Length: 454
Image (cartoon, rainbow, N blue to C red; front, side):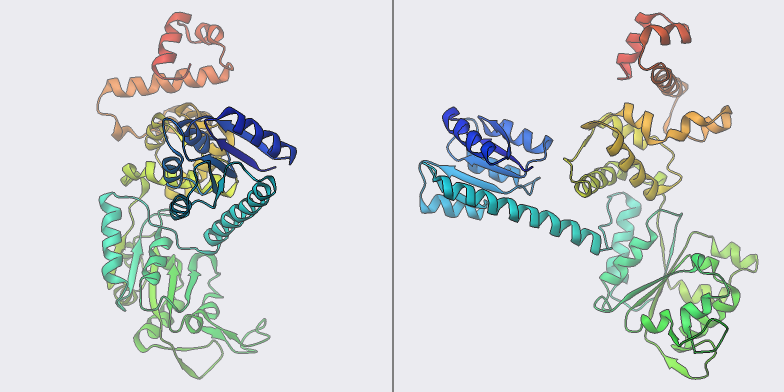
């Protein structure tokens, strides 16, 4: 059932429209001013808005302009003082249509149906584009991320090979995608190979292809990733896990721009730009005899290091907000607000899983919390494994001690977490919790208000 919002300062108009639309099985909300209308658009899932132009406090054009900054909801503007100029201005500002009072019932219902259909198509198109497009924006403004963005702008248009380093989940793959998107090879394919996910005995066949009958399961000829990426970019993810024999063949391919399929004799020319990534320290792997030094120097013409999330905590609010909007859109629910206190609580977590872990936590919070995500939800839901850790080592591993400048900071943090945990365990029963922890109910209520847990 579609939800329609009516914004009009005339009660008879709102009542008439409500009766008509509810008879057609639409859910209807109505307000008498633009300010309240904008608040509803932010909080509720609105499929269509009918908005009067001449209103007190805020006229319809102002409402339309403000709404278009955060919402894709179609607007139908209505007015008893309609002119061609007004209709043109409404369309220019993004209105779906313009209706004059007194409203013609048939035209109203046809316009409403068409606007809802268009709004549905727009939402579906955005979701599909987001799912089809694998290249998302690199979010953040920290020094490390700004350096990466600058490096991509400079390096992408060249043919230089790039080695991307960083921890698992930090966003190495996204950097590789942008290097391809901004390169002169963007119209050709970006072919990805996860070297860690392919058994060592199959990696050469995966990269270079094989001829029919070259080994037991080679029932037909296969084209390898180097040939598939010819003219485009080959992304070798987790290259530190590649076998030494495969490394030797990759080195030859980079030196000569030629490959030979497994079981074949013919040399095949390839035109490939290689971008590699690893979460390992390749210099240590070289010392251990696990990685070839000559291949390392071939790959690392340009080095780009992606910082861990713990090194760029100032970016967490930007990332969390973007994930929240994206996930709520995928679930087709109104975007939930993450409070300032919740953001601080998220920033205090250790983030061993980096960006991937943050996105998973935001999704968990969206599912388990109400309309607002508060620090209480973060403490309760964001990392449920915290309460299962025992002993000092388990607890301190979940706390970012570097963010605390004094003993008082730590004691405040610990008291907050301790009382929150005990209240949750006792289902919010203040008296029972106070007796359990050995303080008065008055003291517990004071502390609960201080930490926003009561």
